[in-house]
Length: 116
Image (cartoon, rainbow, N blue to C red; front, side):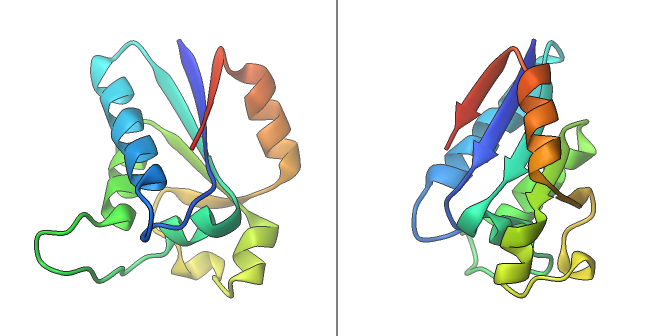
């Protein structure tokens, strides 16, 4: 099954992006799923490399990297990155600047679209 997951919330302050990443990781673990993730709005900050969090607290950048390393594709809205002053070089490995054209293509590709 093919899933598109769209994240909208910032990496911290709510748990919506965290929960979306948890689900993506578990879907990929099954081996029966393809997962594309599109980060837009405040979720663009989830792709920021070098996040520092308190000991024992989840690190959204690390979690997103795990999705990418396990075969998930990660696209980040370029307009949203620019609005937040995040350069391409500031993103985690496996995340790429993306567009609404890419989001449209991924939406048409997916069997299910899940929005967090």
